[in-house]
Length: 234
Length: 237
Image 1 (spheres, rainbow over the protein chains, first blue to last red):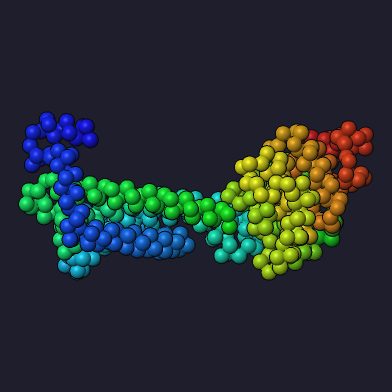
Image 2: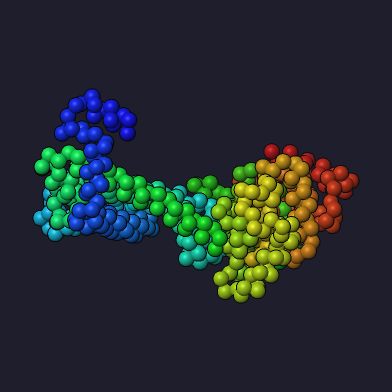
């Protein structure tokens, strides 16, 4: 905050860098505006939906790629293409096909999917083959082998992917919202504040995104810890 | 009696087994003693059904399949001792059957008080007993052990071998143990099959006329056998 304030004094233009006090003052009025909650809820909905769908799809595709080398050879280039192509291209192309309300979800899924897929595949490959051989020799059922060996091996990789995707999800969703301008969205509000040169509001919205991202990261940490403890106690 | 008849096996162009035959008495511990790379582990893998022979037959193997104790102990790090043992038990067993099998195997391997501990909270010796406990709990009549005492320090090795002797004396399991260590063979086995290779061949079969429990490295009878085995192994080099 001190650094920010010092920067503000140094720049000397609130149009470029407003003071922290003026930003928080704008934020305090912003949160009581009619559309604030709608914009936040819609953006959060988009992030959560995209995360859930990307994880679901990534786990399925990762599992399929592990089991079938033929399918892996088909899926891997697609993942590489998604990873390498510019996000903006996807956003522009997606607006031709999808309602602007859902473009950010689609874009966020596309950005998170290769991360989840890659981590799941890596986790499955990291399973100790000697333990799988032992299970096979004792005729342990496939379901138990997957539950006790493969899922446990994937878990740390999937957790890491979740944290990466949560951060990525917020960034990509808001960026897509800026470019597609859905009616209720943090990104849209950010875009409008920039149009009207309302820098304080732009900073206030950025602060909201940071806080949301942080809150979700803490929640995810607590959730995963609880899940781990419950599994250990079971 | 388990019979291996004229087993042949090639690996990467090398003949590991060439019409190899062996008889293994049931309810006894048979040690396959020979140098590393002679083909002992290949024979063990054939007995265990992990690999199939190119030619030859195996007779008298129990229908349930064998239990295994591996050289590199196969312990699942995130499961506690009891769960590790339970992992290999047949799914169609009742809860009482499972409980009884686990209790008995943990008692035999002296792991009962440690049943809720994770493997990383155990000493090396305690952790290496988990494999044995798992093998015993399955109730399989044939146990295949691939250098189970390798890499352990002498004190721990002696302790484990003594425990193994006690366990084997209390069960009717047929055990086949692969080793290149003279003392391991003499302190644990009823029959020592000295082998050489590849291709694997039997140099001599020796009976150890001592009880499974309470064998001492300094027993005169054992010492005489040790000298004989030593000469055999040196002459085969």
